[in-house]
Image 1 (spheres, rainbow, N blue to C red):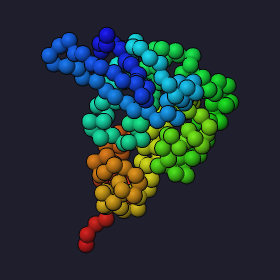
Image 2: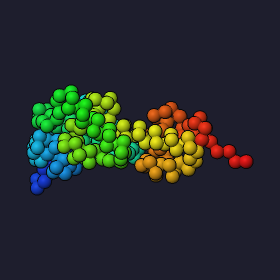
Image 3: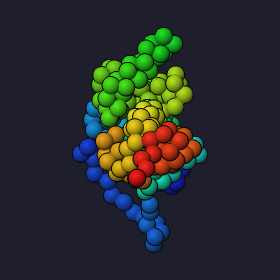
Image 4: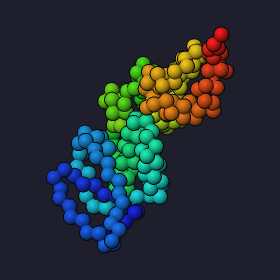
Length: 219
């Protein structure tokens, strides 16, 4: 029996039969994991637990945040990181110690891990969470949690801050084509660029171009 307070897992090869007790059916969110990602979240075992998993109100709220971000076409890296963290948070309802297995515990090791991510993103901001996890030999959800704990914001947010600083450089140099700027710096589109820049600085790209002295005047 499943209701909105529960999550459940289905492993490859399993067959399931659904019986909806109400005429309106149900509404659910399915997240598909590769065997490697499932193992990294579940203590090295790619077979996830069977049976319902109780979820907290906070997990449900994070679920709704993920759906809202997907509907508004947020950055794919942000969606991926949020989905991985949601899966790990839900699985903690089954065995929190197993989800925590493999994560760095010492403060120095956590700082070194966060610094390695910052260095990698400074060189290539488009590197995905999965790629960063492989490079640092840790799991995606542990990497995301450690980075947030050390730096104070998510890897996705850090990536956007780096892109925003690159955008400020170009705007100060007089860049007027925002669509080109968005494409060059890895934003989804021009509107995504404008949303992120405004969220990070409180100003639109056009306002910033004028404030930074990059406005080009036609004689």
